[in-house]
Length: 359
Ligand code: KG4
Ligand code: ZN
Image 1: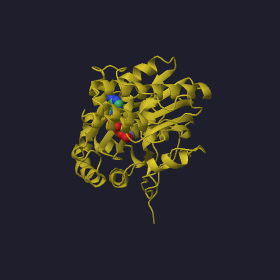
Image 2 (image 1 turned 90 degrees about the horizontal axis):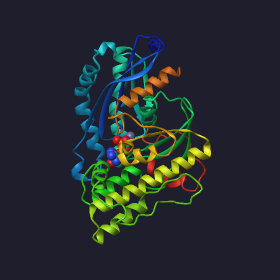
Image 3 (image 1 turned 135 degrees about the vertical axis):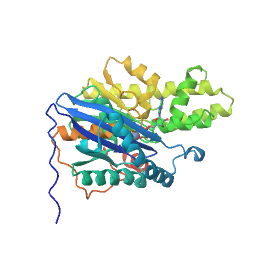
Image 4 (image 1 turned 90 degrees about the vertical axis):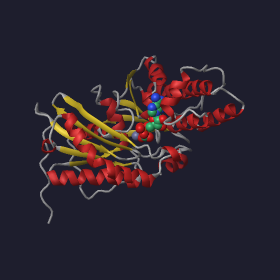
């Protein structure tokens, strides 16, 4: 016999609904608290433990990531609550990422969140990691659909047309590497350190973007796809010929930013969208933000600390689900390593590399 489901809080009152968000999809343990009132959601705390054990391997080791999440998550919860100025008993809702991500890592946060919700007898929402990234930018500005959403992270380069609450259409994606993955790989081959995004960005400040020629990928295409593996190869060849790391960083960043901005702007024009949300780790990039700032579109970015993986963005996704009147998730639901937010379109490259990458 199953117990009656917990009552759903009313998000349309002045009394805040406190939502805990948990993300353990990859190598960051993120817990954050959002207070939702009739005026909208407000991030009250955002605690992220970024795992460093992977640095010596040059990539994330899934089993180590899961173990680190298990070791850290319990110590991060009191910090997330204290920073938000609330007690455990003040929590009204728990939201946790159920996918996509590393299976073992996802399970840690998902099971922790479900257990907490059950113990506190409050509703639980399973959240989609990419929805969290999108809401990290959209909620901040109080944006309502329709808008375009460009998610650029270490694992994804996806362009969605957001037509309503929870309604997504994938209009473009990378054929090969994700944007952040390319930043990381170019930084590694040029000896600039890890994580590559901030390292490339800093080195680019001292470099000449025209010293090494980088062609903007897929120029002249009709669609809205991305490709970064050619830039990576160009960087490797130039490095082997003795190019300065700073010049490589500046040239690579210029081409990557151009590709992202040009493609997103063309898609916005084609679909008649005037607002764009840019989120995910690469959205922290200064050159990318500056270039989008000059497009004439309304562009929303996440606030500081919400670009890279975190729990507050998952709490924001939970807040949106609550406001949209979605019922809580079943505690029987599992995690999914591969979990498309929208069906893959019938384009030559989507069925192969995009699917392969998501696994
Ligand atoms: O969103 P995120 O934390 O994780 C995934 O969901 O993948 O994104 C991490 C990625 C890394 O590849 C990192 O190099 C990149 O975001 N990144 C940046 C910057 N800061 C982080 N890329 C370019 N410029 C930055 N400032
Ligand atoms: Zn992410």
